[in-house]
Length: 75
Image 1: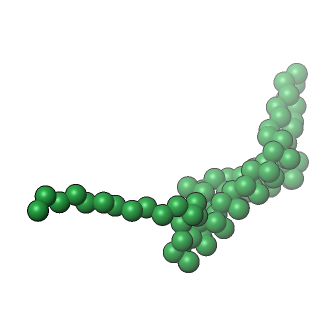
Image 2: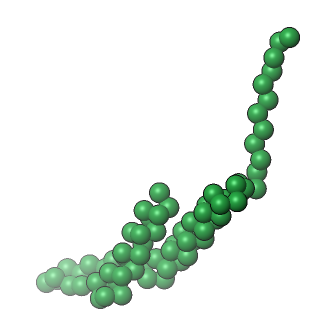
Image 3: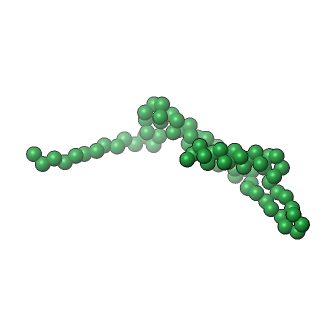
């Protein structure tokens, strides 16, 4: 899910940088997302992606939480 969102934000950034941020048709004006907001979200998503990839390679939880399961048995 993070990779999908990240790729869409990269596409949006590319569209804005190629001049598609704002255009006018007759009296109507269409403005797409703000470049600064998109760059901030890309940075957050990239950090999260790196965090998850590190968790996969090291086997550690990205949140540093450890889960324990207790099974009650009636002996």
